[in-house]
Length: 624
Image 1: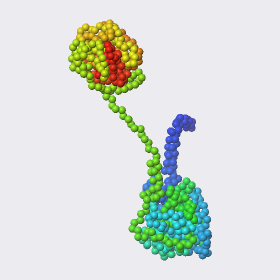
Image 2: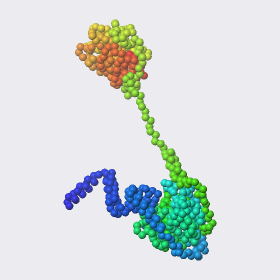
Image 3: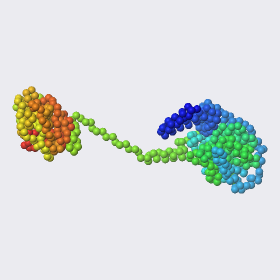
Image 4: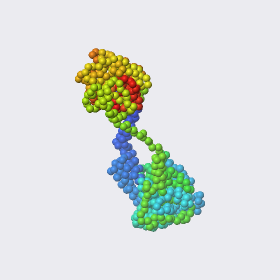
């Protein structure tokens, strides 16, 4: 016992730490498990499932009953339902039981029917009226070809006092047009409609010319012989025959649904019973409940009319019950109407000479089509979700890069064709310090009007320039000693001294005296960084050169790393390389540098063009 208590405590503690979502799932799973176990493993559960199946079988969706009882059980239940219907109709009616009161026929219109009476049971609500003169009842049919008619419309059109729904009809998907009856329709001794031979017996409810209610299975010939003048067909069990209830065990096997029934007392008074169903306020009644109600009212014969969504009662043009159809009253092929002067009604033979009768359906149901059109209109009026347009950036190429200025402004570089004479592309060393185009390799260079151009034999001084103002870098002063041998540009400073203005050229160190291509310059470790024309305006701090100076060659394909305010030249490469790759600042051959980037001391590059001040010496701008 203690172990069980401990287990419960531990379980409670564990469940207490669960989220509400987990608790909900657990509760749902337990409910499903418990309900399924009860329905499928206990005798009461079996009874409930059979009752649900009976309810479905009594509708036009009887095939769905397999869901609760299986296909085999469903078929067996359908067979038993038909068998009971046939058995209940076997007893022939005793017409002598009805004693008509001739005084009733001398009634006034106010005395024709009783006031509607509310009736109810445990699961249902409805209405009931008495019709004191049974000869006042007539079978009425629509007056238009192609569709049925609502009972309220029939009552108003014919001037009837009251009316209820009549026989059955073909009803595709519950959306039929009410124009395809099943069985027989007899009105005023005229067979208005019949889908079988006159000798074939059918389940009918009718009235003789004396007003006697006839319930059972009869052929048209038999009905005419009995003096039946009005009748409709509906395949349903007989409830009461000659004072005897037909349902003695069970509930009738039809489940719960809306019902319309009619019974007759011994004095000839008719009882109309209409029960609402398939609603929260009224689920519906079983056949036995209807039978017991009519027995209690004194009926000696009783039968069922069409039920379900067709069930309704109309009195003086007003619908007193609540039809279960979502569209309200249904269009029907027949109705039982009460007239003050029944012989005044002349039936319309709307089915004569029709080769084929269309039962209708969803495609021509006016209320259904209207509903679908409204739903479509609402969908069209709903604002559509607009997805943001997807933008794609153009692919970056090796010839485009981004540069950052002191104000964090970045632009893309573009390439321009090389200027003639500014770049040595022959791969040969220029003689006498001149470029391939014959330009003297002196330390003095001027920029072209279209961009910054520099002879290939010149180089940047290794010492940083002073402060810049308005994009112009002042050249630093000092003296530099060119390395012996060669006539290329110097690659750095000797003994830590910066070259003086105008003296920034010299011979290259033997073995390395190649001329760097225009726009590219490197320093060996220990060299001073070059000044940046896009700097912050403060002079860069020079770094001390390594003892013994630097090598005498300039980088052929070095990359330039540009930062705010300074430009640090790194890397080495082969001389006369036609291009150079710059990190952060594009300084390659045939490249126009973005705004705010300094290519060399004394040069300010704006809008992709670097312009050196006229007469400035000792500076170098990158060649295009």
